[in-house]
Length: 307
Image (tube, rainbow, N blue to C red):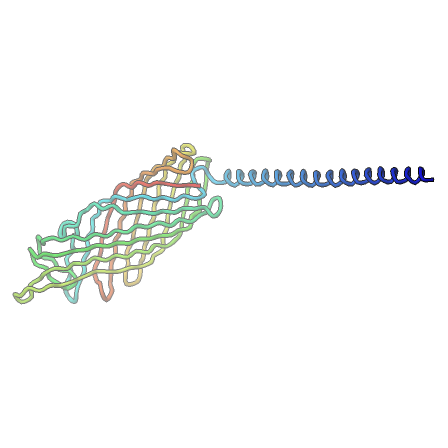
């Protein structure tokens, strides 16, 4: 009887051990299956993500970038003429370079950002600031802001011009290497010209300050062309026009740019361009009645980063 009990105990121990091993094997198999399932799920998700990225990249024309940031300088020759009438006096057409000694050459820092919101539509913002002061002895009589500055008068002159614009672009690709675009947006410009100097009043010397200042926001129309010789070497042409036909400050601002860009690294490159700008404003304001004509043109160089 004792032998039978020992035999049953041994058998139960063996059965328990076998059941434990069976359950452990089943648990291990289940966990392994889950782990393999998760691994294949992640692999499939990564593969789908890569396919999506490559598809999205393929949908962007070769002549465009998803994101393009340009940092550089514009080195133009500036020709500026400003007249400011005062009271019943007709102001002189003052050449800020010839009459007031402002240097024609000026380096302007420039920042430009372009990015695609969709594969063939996007947004761009850019602008520049021009500011210059000089001192000179007048070589002729001038009238500015109601003040008569006589020949040989010593004056200090300043000229400031800010322009900023933003536009939404639509791009059309007739082939794999070219895109043509049209854009609509707005431009803000702010112009200020000042003259401080001595003048003669009834035979007595006096000092005077006169200025012409005006700012406005106007609608902007842009046209563009991009050509990709290959993935890293491209050329482009841009035209932009602003016209403000009504209000106290009217006129137009035109811009034309021709450039090339090269990327020795995939995301980092250089751009060289030549730009010409023409600004013509007429003012009929309380603080300025007159006209401003500013033309500047010259080369520009940029470091470009793209995605």
